Image (tube, rainbow, N blue to C red; front, side):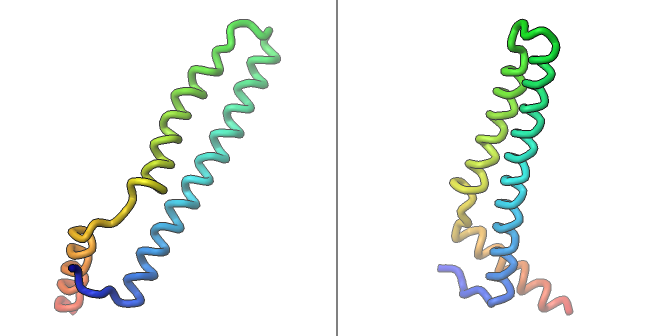
Length: 95
């Protein structure tokens, strides 16, 4: 079992997670805006083949993986917590 973390370390990890979530929500907002622009361009240029679905789908796959990384697969393992403690100890000894 990894040693207990200090309040500073807990807040540091929490800040990182909040930053990752904020970045994901920003990614969604940019995805929506850009893809709406692509649909508008398509609509004003003759409404032929709906080419906008290709960049929308490709970017959507990336967005899905980003979401999975932020919300599903980003759980810190005991190894990672242990390594964080080791680095914190090294930094403290170096001062």
